[in-house]
Image (cartoon, rainbow, N blue to C red; front, side, top):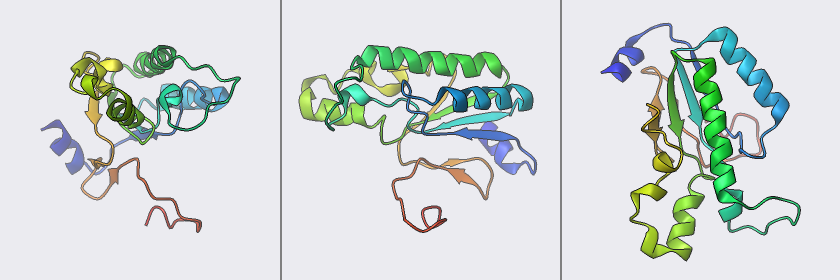
Length: 166
């Protein structure tokens, strides 16, 4: 019902934050983002995918100088989310999974199929989203902000400006 009421509103302030890639985030960019959130206090904040990098469980080769502790990545992401919640305590928060978060499912399917059924290894559980009152949207699903505007992480990149959005 809350989503329906929001989609019917003409004026609705929302912030969309994506591709932070914690723990490899750009600290200056995050600092600016937090200042804007503190000033604007949007009604809705959508974390639109690739907030958690999942570097340590990626199938790609790893750099020697990069830390590879998945629990640390999760803990840093939780701190990032908690910081947003403290900055904007009245904002509704939505966490939309991206292709980097999808690495958790891919890793389990490839290396630990026996553990795939464990609820504690689902992203909402790992990040404590449910207990924090954060709505979760799976990778690839659309999240409607208004009747004319939806958010998704997306999977298509084109060379020409604007082509990906099309």
